[in-house]
Length: 463
Image (tube, rainbow, N blue to C red; front, side):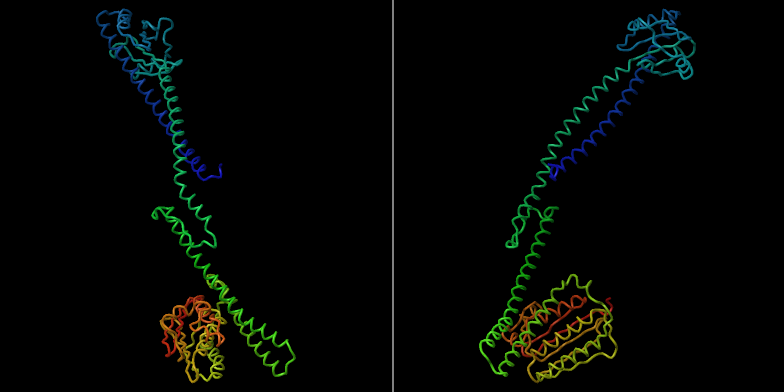
């Protein structure tokens, strides 16, 4: 039960509301109590001053303290209040009818305070007592009015009961309402959970329903749908990659197996065995290249910046070494290869092996698709704070529609011709990955029958 977010939200809501209501009730209760006691004091003061004023008028007529007191107390009757007239020593002269037994117990210090300040208040035995002098010009005695504090306590007790009942009812209704509000608020999440459970590797095309894309849950659903789109795209790319890799590996393996079986069926001459072994060697080399390329592409581009061995690389020497290595391939095919470089030394911080692999792949690709007597050039220059490597050939070129796909894995413009030339469609993919891992960019310009131009830009100030 307590594992439910709905229940926990309701409990938290009820707890916070209960604390708020209790604090508010305490504040109101003590504020009301202070007001009640203050009003009681003001009422007692008004009453005792009325008694003193009436006594002074009656004394002017009768000239008798006791007679004046009896007349005043007979005329002035206050329910739930006790009235008493005393002499200067505090001895009772006259008392109200509801105070027929014992006089009001007034401390002498109260009379002294009343004489000095013309008014005094004191609480004795549960009575709130107000005392004033009978007159201000002559010292005749004092008038006192007392009221039980229980009058206020009854009202406060009733207020406590109403607060207790009210807070309980409000908390109960608020908790029930909060539970249903939490349930209604969490219904979209429950719906999203049910929909997510139905999404599997076979149903990555499914998406969450979005009722309102502008609220928090709607934005969450949009984010999840974007994530599903990226997962679906990655999953399709992975499936395509596996299928293409399997296809590329299957052909040389089939050739190896078939040639081996044919060679073992009967005794052959040395020349025939050499031809078979030569074919097996070629296919083994092809397999090795494919496996090596796949292993390199298995390095995640996201992790590449952290895994690269960054060290100073003199690009002039790297381009010269790559051109010298590619010269062998170009000469074998009858293609002219020329390398040019700026006079200044361009130092780049990166993985030297990968940089050379990138340039060699571009040169190897140019040699493969440039016919005999063609020309290939590789040039290094500085452009806008970047090292620019340009590989240009006069080969068969790339159609405009295929240029945006040449960096995809296993993509080949002419699949039959590419396989004949020994390509697996991974060379340019590796080039693009290396360039991206080093924070650079690559651009292609090509026209069918006119050749291709690959331009790589690498930042010189990156470490």
